[in-house]
Length: 76
Image (cartoon, rainbow, N blue to C red; front, side, top):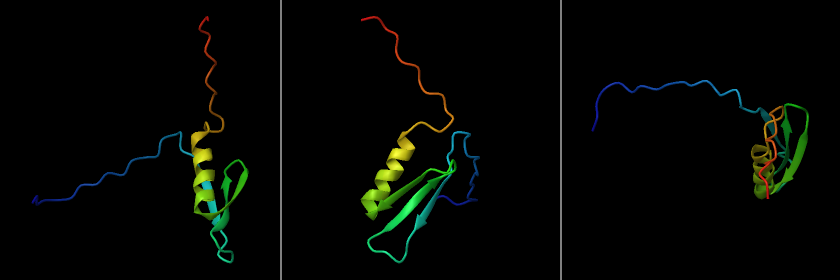
């Protein structure tokens, strides 16, 4: 077992980070709420699978303001 000081590092978030706000409605069952993006877009969900689907679609899409990849120009 090692003995000695525990060293931890705090790293800054990369510039490509995204801010989202998760709002859960505690009055409704099953899990129900919405995810709001910094640009004002709102995505409602119901249930854990709905939440994961919304988060997956948001995180898989390119970051707002990011340049879309250019289409391939290889000849056929």
